[in-house]
Image (cartoon, rainbow, N blue to C red):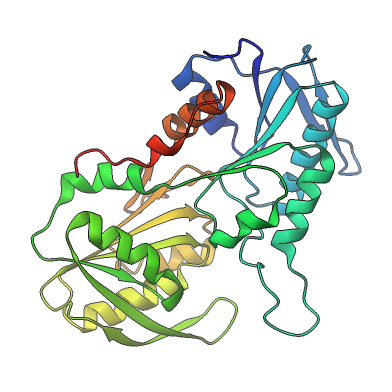
Length: 315
């Protein structure tokens, strides 16, 4: 049974998604003032009584990342000081997730630092989607509900089935995700070996698997400059791929990415609205995760399992 003390608030990172989540579950978005002082400091005021309430704060840590992260921490602190019973940080896109290990001397593990900051601010639970690496869940000493965008993607891909489909990972790290997609879609599996030559540049060096005359689906969790995707698409084209689609959970696109996508190496880029995405006239399909997150919020609120949200329709 749903707790009538359910309250949902949002920061400024993706208000449209928060409003869509609230509409999907029939809950009114809470009233809060979230603004900045002239010197850039964030200011938050929750404009309704939340004493003893089950509070959900929706905020993606998309650019400007540090501003949105700080805004979320301040909102959590405000809810804690207003005596909320439980505070769930709903983070559709968890920034800093790629800094999840110490891979060179004297560097931080920032994904763990962000986890510590959320707990210190007063979050008692986290709801997120498609973390860059699964072990980030272990960085928290509070419960983490980790959802996947794949059911949303599969529903869209069901309308585009191909008899000669190959699911490819654009790098070694994404092989597990690609294997799961290939298994569900009944496709064969491939991989592109790459070498990073700079912060925004990638070189694809080889293709593992036969893609000649096939429709290829590239799968990845995040792209910013589209360097990995377009480099993979180019070498796949050179190896005879008929068409190339990409399914990416989080598209934090910058101007470099849009320029690369205009080369038409990728026929369709499928992503979610975990962060705001502007297609700019390009073949970018944005799928909504609002119903998925909304249902998860209701289940957490009523202390039900969220496992069934991983079930896929039509396959």
